[in-house]
Image (cartoon, rainbow, N blue to C red; front, side):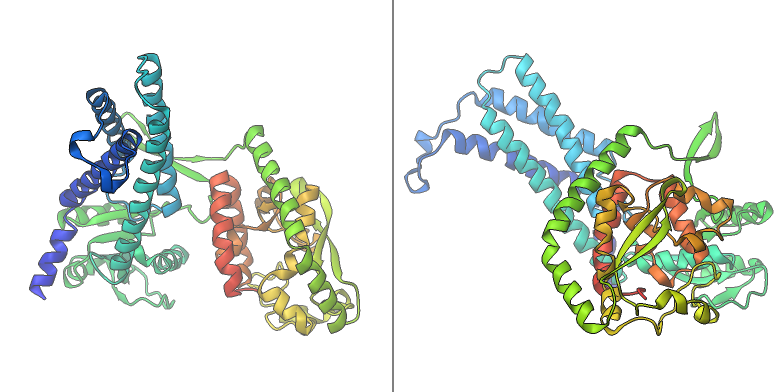
Length: 482
């Protein structure tokens, strides 16, 4: 065991890791640059190659450009944090950073070659080298991140976390940590100034007065404070954590009520938390709409055989129409006809009032029952895998909906919303959304709306892409759908 621990410490030494990342990048970059150069001027079969006949035209000039290219690449990647350890960085985000950095640097190098009139430099070598660099640098980072995530999830170089406070934010932190084992956060327990009886699935280790003892006994690396509204408590914990050389993270006290984008700015030496409403430019909306039209059009064509099959099965399974059409409230409160494959008996709406006392959605504003007696046999299958939602591609094509956005609620349920819920209608409703990948029908109405508002205030095309990618495994698992 001591030998294994020492090996792990060596492996995870930050300086060694950062130097290793830089070294691997340089090796791959020069391999990507020199390989096309060598093959371009030496096309003789390998068996006939002779060192004396190898060609290296303008080799000094090429080496100069290659060294400059490599230097600019690693400098740009270092500036964008690619040689630091960031476990929270997603694979798509890291790939995006690499691709954009390489495109920027290569454009600069290409411009230099053009304006310096380096007529010797082959365009084929330049394009091929760029393509190989992108593939090698992104490829090895994906492999590296998958390996490190696997090791960290198994317990290597984990951080012991102590949470201060027992409230709704505490439950959310634990949920997020459990969903991301690759971050290496291991919650050892909770301390709280009140005698909380709520079960978080994590032991309550004691009170604030026991802070030092608990941190020593459980080898705490970081403290997360969820009661930041208590300035005296935060100040006290910060001082104690500093004396013990323990990291400190503080959750904004109004996080639950203010799901808008938060940034940190400085006024001189004074740090400021800035809450900013997201404004969407017309250009971004145009791109989003273009993607919706293109994707929905092709998906409708591809899914046509599935539509026909589902229609036949619905007719055989239960008498009634194939489609269920309902009025729902969408963008800016506009009411539109919402399409679904019928998954309930024909008279389902008239039976709803008799079942209201069995509503399982917490907060009671929207209506859902896990084992709704109105659902048909084929309807259970369609709902589990969200196949009943496919006709909403027609809504997307028409412009009533988008591929990604807050889910539209029926008009009668929308009438129960208060003014704080209205901002979720500032963007087109979607086939899928943030709430759908965070728990679907298992969410309370309050949590559902919170994720919708967070989406509206933090929207980006990249966020839409991430939600679409994460929707697929959620749908295939069929979890939280009823």
